[in-house]
Length: 482
Image (cartoon, rainbow, N blue to C red; front, side, top):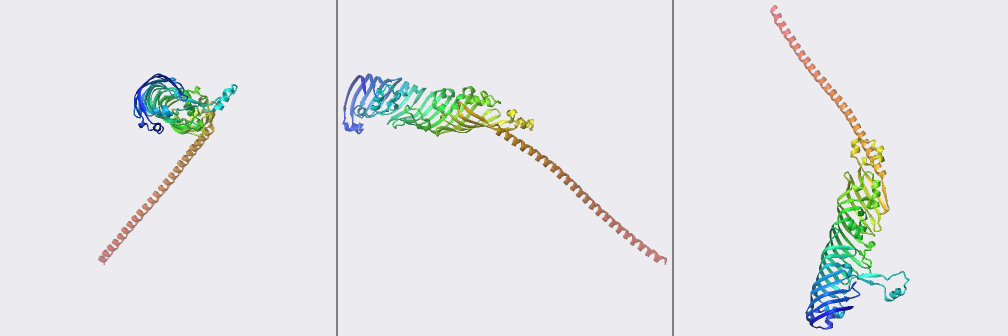
C-alpha cells in the first residue's frame, strides 16, 4: 500500500485492539477532525491509483463522518459523503472499510474498480518472466476488492462499462465479501432505458452472476452491435431496424474478465418488437430466404407489437412459437432454437394463399374456380438449419402441394356428394309426389264410390216407396169397382 499527500488532523482517540478485532466499534472513543489534500493512494486491489484532492472527516465515538470527499481514479471522478464505521480497523488491522455513502459523478467507470489479479503462483510467474520466448501468458482475473463493505447510493451523468456508455444513471450498489449487488439501477442507453437488478461475485474461482435485466424501447441495430449478449440471444434480429423492449432473467458463470460463459447460462426472457423493418442484405440468412420466397420482398415486411418468449438451456436459446403477419394475407409462425455458436434449428410455417405458389402447383390450380384460387390457403413449412452465416433453408413445397391436392379431392368429393344428394332428393321428391297423387286418386275413387252407392240406395228406397204407393192405389180403386 502506497500513501502520499498532506494530512491535517486535530483528533483524539482511544481504543483497545481487542475491540477492533471483535468489531466493537462503539467502544472506540474518538473526537476531532481531519482533512486530506492532494492525497494519492495505490493498492494491488485497485486498478488505478486513487487521487483525493480533498477530504474532510469528523470523528465521533464509534464512527467517522465523511463530510466532503473529492476523488479521481482512472476515468472516474466522484464526490462522496457518508459515514465510516471502522476506519481504525481498516488502518490498523487490515479489516474491510464499512460504511454508507452517497456518490455523485460526472463519469463513473466500473472497470476502474475491478483489479486484474495474477492467478499463478510466484514461482510460476518468475518462470514465465524468465522465459521470454514462451507463448503462454499469465492468466489474470478481475476481482471485486475484498476490503470494501459498503452501501452506495449514486447518480452519474455517464457510466462506462466495458464498451458501453450509459447516461443519467442512478441506483444503489452494495459491495461485501467480493460481491457487488445492484439494486434499482436505471440509465439511458441506445435511445431507450435500461433497468438492472442483480449481483456479481468474484469470491469463488469461477465468478458468478445473477441478473434481472430490462431494456425499454431501445434501438435494435445499435444494441445488437454494442452488446454481445443480445447478439447471441437473437442473432436473426441483426437484420431488423426498429425498437425493442425485453426483460431477461439470467444467471451463470463468468470468465476471469467477467464475460458470460454462454454454455453455463440459464434463465428466461420476454421480448417485444415494438416496430421494425427488415434489411434483407444485412444477413445472408434473410437474403437467402428472400430469394426462395419470390412472391414477397422481405424489405417490405413491417413488424409491429411482435411478442415472443424464450429460455436458456444447454448452451442455446429456445423460442416458444410466436406469430406475426409476414404480408397482408400471409401469416407466419416461428419456433425452434439456436446455440450460442449460432447453429440454427428453426421451423417457420406460412399460412399462404395458393395463388402465390403459381407454377409450382399449376396443375392443381387448374382444377379450382377463380374464387377458390383467390381464397384458398395452404400451410408452407420452411426449415432452417446450419450456421447463421451459411444457413440451409428448405422450403417444403411437396407438403403444400399435398395439402392442396387433398383439399381439392375433398372439395371434388364434396361436390359429387352434393350432386348425389340433389339427385336422390329429386328422385325421392318424385316418388313422394307420385305416391301422393295415387293416394289422392284412391281417395277420390273411394269417395265417388260411396256417393254412387248412397245415390243408388236412395234411388232404390224411392222406387220401393213408389211401388208401395202404386199397390195401395190399386187396392183402393179395385174395391170401388167391385
